[in-house]
Amino acid sequence: MASKEPQDIFQSLRKDAFKALEEAFDFETIRKIESDYFGKNGGLPRVLRGLKDMPELERKTMGSTANALKKEIKEMIKIKKGEIEKNNALKNKDDWFDISRPGKKISRGHFHPISRILKEVAEIFESMGFEIVEGPEAETEYYNFDALNIPKNHPARDMWDTFWLKPLKNRLLLRAHTSPMEARYMEKNNPPLRIIAPGRCFRHEATDTLHEHTFYQVEGLMIGKKTNLANLKGILETFLRKLFKNKDLKIRFRPSYYPFVEPGVDVDIKLDPKKDWLEIAGAGMTHPQVLKNVKLNPNQWQGFAFGLGLDRIAMLKYKIDDIRLFHSGDLRFIKQF
Ligand code: FA5
Image (cartoon, rainbow, N blue to C red; front, side):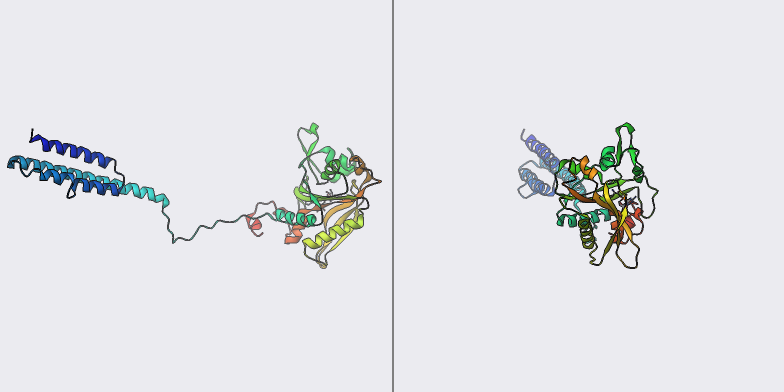
């Protein structure tokens, strides 16, 4: 029995060592196992010390068993260290980065030139007491035409070559101008009032350097007791001089026809005495019929309206000679702003 005792001890040492190694996942634990089993007061030296009183033959047998066990545990420790090393390398791979490498540049987005000009336009009109309102791009026939004194079959409808939405019986269209917002706003708000209504418009155009099928307008409307054509000229001139930061900028009114104003004008601008006039807006005094359509009394209220071509203004401001560049998706163009 006495000779079996060290054997049993070896067996349980082996079992414990292997279990501890199985559960070890870092070098510190491995170091502790090494000291637990091979250190001065570790398991194996202690058992070996206990062999010294044994008969020689038995001592030899036990000695070689102890050596074999020592070899086996050391071998296992070596394998385990390799595994830990491999795991650590994998774990650190994602965290690792070379601090000497140049940083990755995050390119900053910026406003499209149309958004930029719209922001500036809105700020200037706000500073002059105008409220900013918005309306739908898919509009009813009533607001795009009838409310603006353009009845069905009237030749004036030909001035706006329109995209009708299917089914046609719904009489919906992509608005051809921002003027529908005049009627929409006046139906719900009492004068005196000052608004601008910026937004996208659509026309069935043969496109060229000045005409797009999709473009932006800024509608303006001011209604009061005595609002007149001179006020319109003053407001537009002040606005344009602020926008172009040019005190000598000139505008001119040319008589024109729009069914929703009387009298009607086209507004031209000249930035440079050597350059041609460029038409940037239609405008005029709100037609009495339009006021009646929104249940306002034309004997009490009067005012003006204008429709500015925002793309045309952006072209002048940023010196762009082809309107089609705005929506071309050409990054070489867009990145210049
Ligand atoms: C109108 O659309 C009227 N609703 C303007 C108006 C409002 C008149 C209020 C009276 C009172 P017109 O079709 O002229 O008008 O367009 C006004 C401006 O929009 C033009 O001067 C031009 O600057 C711009 N514009 C018109 N069509 C296009 C187009 N296809 N591409 C780019 N800009 C355009």
